[in-house]
Length: 222
Ligand SMILES: *Cc1c(COP(=O)(O)O)cnc(C)c1O
Image (tube, rainbow, N blue to C red; front, top):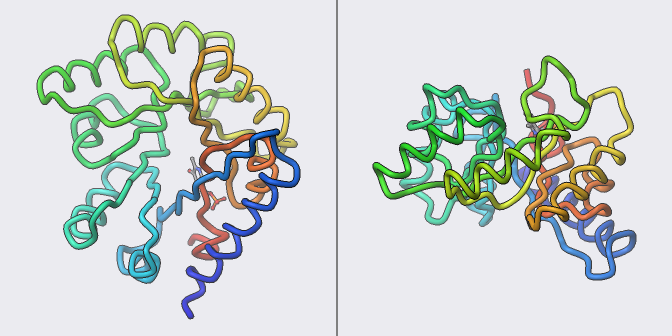
């Protein structure tokens, strides 16, 4: 059996166990976003053939070179943009992605709304929160998140479904996951995209609805 299929099956089991054993009263079993960045389209075939449909990419251009072909061949693929989005790539991103997880500023919200008004179509959106307030990292800082959520909903009428975070690599992730959950709850948002290859069991136990897993499925990236 292909490694990626086996890896995904094991991760699925672990995520489910963590959510049930340590999770909330009403556990939510997180969905697994297979992060395919830096791997070629053909690497995805075994997972697609096995029925997996949920994938994530962090660059618009790379995704454009891989996913239109796969989407034509396999029905019901759900592709998430998990990397920063430049405003001038918004239209391309909205054409290809089913969910954009990296909405983090008003200018981008305005551009998404403008394109939605023209095309009548809009992917579901998550707001990326820079929970560690790292200057080099994308995402709105926690103190400004409520205001951005409100603007997206009330002014631009955008389909904001939840939040995403990427905790600092050198820190214990659980306080970041807890903060993300708190912000989501007070804003009535359901979706929580948090947890990657190193911390998905923690994220699952803390109420993630989606975990984003790359290397634990496909191996180390070059
Ligand atoms: C690359 C990436 C992931 C997956 O990382 P792994 O550690 O390989 O699981 C998850 N989220 C984002 C935003 C990424 O860029």
